[in-house]
Image (cartoon, rainbow, N blue to C red; front, side, top):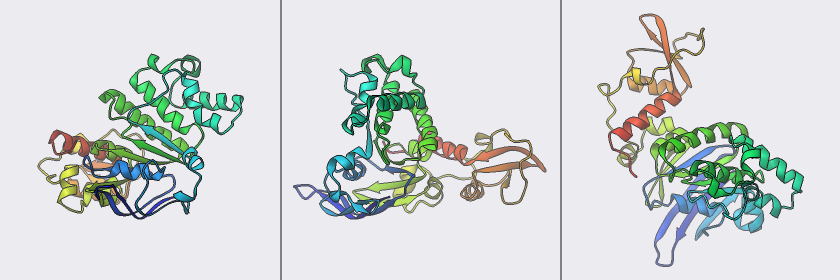
Amino acid sequence: MIAFENVTKKYANDQVAVKAIHLEIKKGGFFVLIGPSGCGKTTLLKMINRLIHLTEGTIRINGKRISDYNIHELRWNIGYVLQQIALFPHMTIEENIAVVPELKKWSKPQIQQRVHELLDMVGLEPDKYSQRKPTELSGGEQQRVGVVRALAADPEIILMDEPFSALDPISRTKLQDDLLELQQTIQKTIVFVSHDMQEALKLGDRICVMKDGEIVQIGTPQEIIQNPVNDFVREFIGVEEYGENTFNIQNVIEPIAVENIQRNQENTISFNDSLQTILQKLAHYECLGVEEKGEMIGVVTRASMLQYLAQDSLERGTLNG
């Protein structure tokens, strides 16, 4: 879908922002770029829609070099969501969402139908919100509009540059949940920049950890947590010191949602199993039944484990801002 081939970005003073990047982002994936400030993640994102021009190498979308696309054609097919929500203050919510469809010469009935459909999709009642101005909305509501504006013309790709980092924790968590739910429906290719490992673990199906303009490790959340490639990754994600004395399965166990969970040796764990054993099995199963003294007492899910690991790393103060 999106391929980086030996991509480098240098500035006039020979400062290297990104260096010889080889990377492929698959269609329909939720790909998170993460790393310390100044590592090149936002530069990498902005090169996809040519907001920043590469110095060396090639970026391809669907096999075609981005330099061969008409710039308007390229950007119309790429939604873009910023941390600074950047809604037009003099326009209504409906007018804000309609900007790209209007540029693409959609009919008015088609645009209105699309606007109402998208507002419904993110829980903003069209009759209540479509004619409001941005200043009449909360920060979380404005960012929802920012997300659906990026979706308005049904682009294949959505770029999101730390879109929730300016929001309060409650709004941020809610929007993360909403985005995950939305992605199940829309199945877009999302490239998401974050500096928050808890957010990356929650949202991404693949995570790219960067440092000093280079890729350090790419993998699923489970792969990065289980097998950090070096000390930098270990320290950045905060899992360098997980041990049996710090892990309590009670922190991740959930009630059994289905009465008759299929019992077999592969997708069942013991109440006393080690963290490493559980992580290894969760790399292959979304949900594991937990047995104690021969009885099924609950389940551990991949999501609950990732949330626990991310929260634990935050509490131990090992995440980089």
